[in-house]
Image (cartoon, rainbow, N blue to C red; front, side):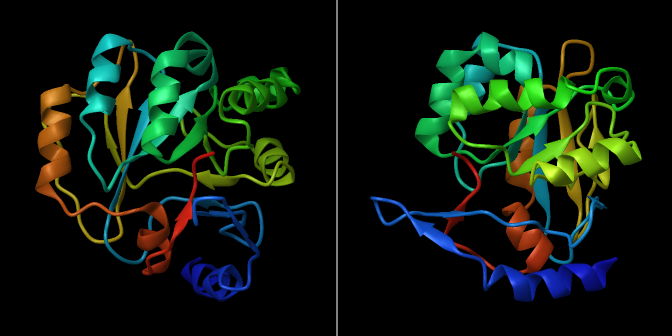
Length: 216
C-alpha cells in the first residue's frame, strides 16, 4: 500500500492550488488512487480527535489549542448543535474532517452520507476532505460513495478511548475519542499533545510540509 502514497506524493505537487485573498492556499486532492482506507503514515505522527459530544469543555479545550493542531473529525449532528464552537474552529483555522455514523447504517440508509455532508457544508461552506466512520467500519459500497464525493478515507493505527494516553511510534495516526460514552480526559489529552511532536496529516503521510489548509 505504501507505494501508492509515494506515487500520490508526485501527483500532489501537480495539483492545482487556489490562492486565497490573504496569501493562503486551499488544496483539493485524493490521497489514494482508488477507494482505500489509510491507517498509518510514513514519517512522524498525527493526532486526530473524534468529536460527537461536548460543549463548554470542548470550547475551552479548543480555545486553548496551539499549533500544530490535531485533525478534528466532527459529527454532523454535533456541528448543528455547536455553531459557536464551529465558528471558533474556523477562526483558528483548525483542520477538520467529517465523522460519519456507524458503517452499517450507510447500507440501510443510502442517502445518509449526503445528508451528513450537507450539514458539514452548511457550517464550513466547503466539502470535507477527510472522512471516517464512527466505528471505523468501511463497507465497500460506502468506500465507493465516499470516493465519488472526493473525500479521503482515514482510519487510525492507535485508538484511545479512555484511561492513560497510549505509547506511539513513527507513522502512527492516533484517534482520541470525545463521545458521550467513550471520552478521554481533557487534562490527559493536553498532556498527550505536549508529550509527542505531532504534525499535520500531510506531513505524516508524505513527509513534507505544505502551506495548504484542510479546513474551509
